[in-house]
Image 1 (cartoon, helix red, strand yellow):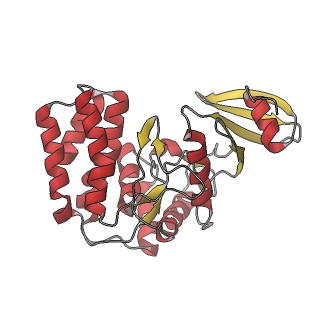
Image 2: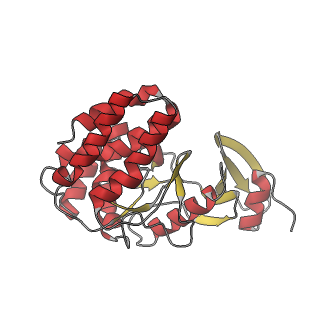
Amino acid sequence: MTAVSTPAEAATKFTGRAVAEQRGLSGEVTEVVLDSGDTVAVKRGHAREAVTAEAAGLRWLSEPDVVRVPAVHGNDDEWLVTELVGGGRPTHHAAERLGRGLAALHASGAPAFGAAPPGGPVDAWIGLAPMENARGEDWPRWYAEYRVLPYLRRAVDEGTLDGDEAAAIEQACARLPKVAGPAEPPARLHGDLWNGNVLWSAVDAWLIDPAAHGGHRETDLAMLHLFGCPLLDRVLAAYQEVAPLAEGWTERIGAHQLFPLLVHTVLFGRSYAGQAVAAARAVG
């Protein structure tokens, strides 16, 4: 088979339709209009297995049929072709559906903390940063070892965080067992649930670009808090109606934000380092 080298060729390969038009959406994503009139999003992976991991994550999130994610038309090691979604404005109705859907998604569970979506690679990516999906049963220990400390070590090695800042984050990790709240079963997480990965229509919110894995449900919600989410109060109220959060969950938001903040520190530098250290010092 001829190698795929353009978004149009990828769209045709995985939909079986000819291409009528294409236009860039953002960076690595291209909007492609097929001769049927349907429109798809074509994404080129930034690293080996990144596309495979994303496709597996989308399928895993769609499996319980409780949140809206783009349908996967097909993928190979380099290209991912999905349904094109979004394009609307947030509404109260959509926000409340998102909250209820997230509660049901998390409750659908995962085999373990760090469990990767079936059919994908064991290790994956969060944005442009690698993410190790080693399994664990004890959330505080697993979270520190696989979601905080790897990015802390990289930030220190690259000179983005200094020794005192690193010590503050290590101390926060040591306090996690005492402040993590009641033990909960592994939840099925989107894993990179910042505002840019929530696309709105009048009826629904759609979730894109997952770093899906088994984790603590409060981590997804902490990411929504960190980078802002329209109508977040409505999202959370609807979530709580379906699956109330354990007492004191708002006091744990900073602990759950350590993961995305350190990822951003690694990817984007000192502009996020201060936030990461402040979140660490607020733990416990």
